[in-house]
Image (cartoon, rainbow, N blue to C red; front, side, top):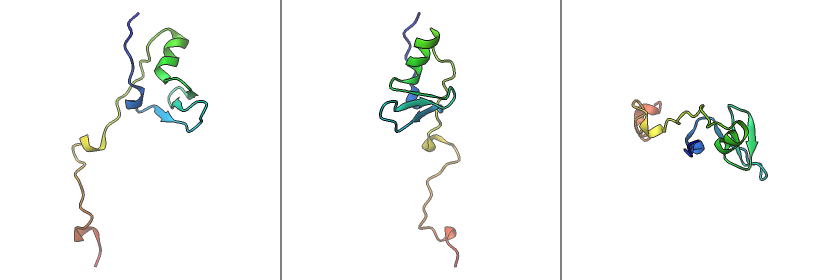
Length: 77
């Protein structure tokens, strides 16, 4: 058994629930808990979560250029 930690907060399935008793959740497995979802999956199944998908950061998208909304082309005459 390896002790590789899954970075849940960088996963597209991670969610903040705003529930003080269970502030962390997983959209894919549809649960919320007080612990990180990957820890709960590991405790429940005995296996690491294999559904981790890295979030795409907005500033890393190739066609996402910084927009200057002061540019007149965005505003009609």
